[in-house]
Image 1 (spheres, rainbow, N blue to C red):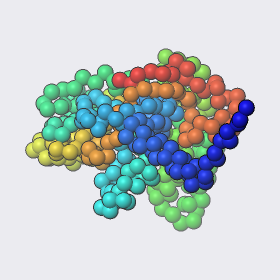
Image 2 (cartoon, rainbow, N blue to C red):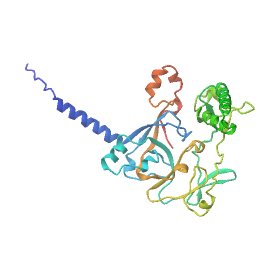
Image 3 (cartoon, one colour):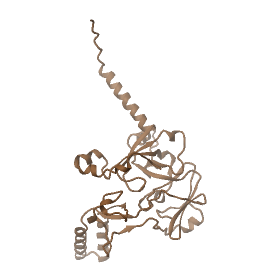
Image 4 (tube, helix red, strand yellow):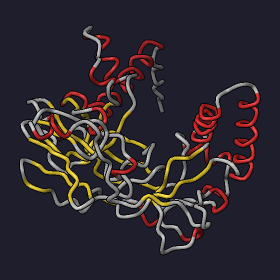
Length: 325
């Protein structure tokens, strides 16, 4: 029987195949779908830190984002400052550019969005109608230290005394130490007061790191706590665009502008702080939670290698494979 020897591919052919495969993957990831990790608690409890999500990019090639969509967009204000050079612009958008943020669409082009405080609670009006927002975080936020608070407080007292002894004004020394202590705080996390520290549904909480008041109770920031504006009342009343990071704002959106906000209003930096985002900064709709891990690591494999046993205990198994609403 005659055997036909298979022709070996040349180096050039292999190289072209690899380039073609990489190009195909690039096009799919750029225009088809994306995989994202939640880096902050701004969308709690809809999204939790450490969760991985599937995003639909394809649909937004043919339709505009809608009210209520949970979207991924480029970190502002970087998204407003792309290069005018077409090649550089393409590289910034699809290869290496700003990090991704995730928020919910509250206002679309042409909408009038107003934030107000009524009966001591923040509310949002869309085109004159008060919004019903069932997705907002209903749990208080608990404040945590990154290190043993006893040691931190002892250090702060010693450092303040040292500054005063060196000639620094006592009030200034107190502010300096307070700023240093603030850097030792972890981002606040959603907390269920009805559950023990060991049985928290969202994050594992070390009780030794909890901020406590004079009575020894955890310091909590409750949902619906209003953030008042100091200077915007006149402009808001006159319907002039205004935002300052508070719950009192007004904006009339232009043809290419969107107003997005986090579901965790007390822990979200969103359009209330940086204003509307542009349509060209939006690149995907978050549609599916793939998995959920209580971790701050950007790469799960690093977490697994460093904590091979504890890694599995921090899996939130009940939050795997869920549609995002």
